Image (cartoon, rainbow, N blue to C red; front, side, top):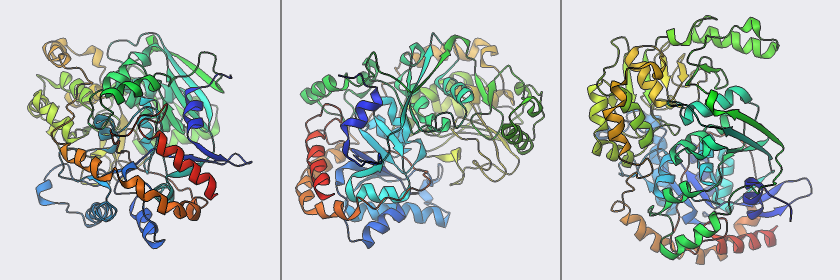
Length: 566
């Protein structure tokens, strides 16, 4: 038997049919929905007279447009309000589980899925959002899709794709203190470039990856898309299994044990062949800061802004020149001398409890610089916010002059009230520094949570390794008492979800009558630009599968019907 990569195993398990040109119909286990890329998909479903193929495969949450303050007053912006209300109405119409804006479990879709145990190893997971790759940290094949594909998955639970090539990125050795998962992935993108992963699915491996918590692994996979990759993957290990155990929507008891036996096979075989491989020495990494308008424009904190004149590639030279003009920076300037106007700690990349602890460890006993207009801290979910408050992190931030907000995408992108003014410069823990990403003519520098907090305190970028130890002694010891993986999962909050599981367990009985939908729409695939989010619903009463978790039996029956209908 030929040796397989992790990606090969996940792909092969979900193939329904492959055409001679390589186009492949694959089964989708989980579909995560948010308010931005779903309205047209639901409208198309309605106009065609179709129903969602598998209700319990979908889970929705509003996150892009929701305000992070003053929610008791609703959403002021009429466009944002309409998108959120449309999602509410569509989910109510079709019986799709949604964590509404005022649900204590609400948050960023790529945060709530894992923390609820709705993201499981071996799944195929899609969402109308680029950063769906986050879920690959669990040994799942997860990727963003366009709006027309959202409709296709709703209608058929399948999707037409072409298999990507295999790339492995090994981070060997031990990363220095204060070099985080964010620094690792920024350094990788700086080496690969934003197109280096195009046509590939990237598996991250090596000592430094194995040493990361699940939260750190999610940060790495989250930004795989910024290297151009289809998806990012990390093999299942004991860290994965410990994180998932007792999560509200994960299998329980004997079912969990059965699932673990299968999930432990989710790794690349020893002699598996990769189409490309790069190796990074973790010991040589430093804290990273982006300087331009692409994640690949990144340097270490002790470096200087590069000079386009030294770049031999004409295309890159032109891009660097444009970026420097937009960012109002001069070649040769030390990155540590760049002053900021605002800082943002949040997003689907860095808004989990571990991220907030890291930022709080820097902020404790200090205060933001007087020249820094605002520092926003937006937790990734209501449950992350509650745990942070239980640990007193909110008080640390407030005493430091930071603003403690509600969960949402917030200032990651200018689709809500959290945004930069023209010309303002921000130290941001988000994932994209494109022109206008955080507001018209905004200037974004991507950093880790600790680096963002340090920049807010100093008023400019600063090497956190040079900070006085006051912020990292007592506070760090206190924060270390709680494992990053022990985030409260809100079991009592999920009692309604448990009832929902029972209510929807009969949904499979309706699937037989919907077989015609697959035939009518399985050939109707249109690709569009994606900008979506993630989350899905795992019904723990289903028996676990060898790869896809608790849906193998119905997945196979769906695939048989799909083959028959084509």
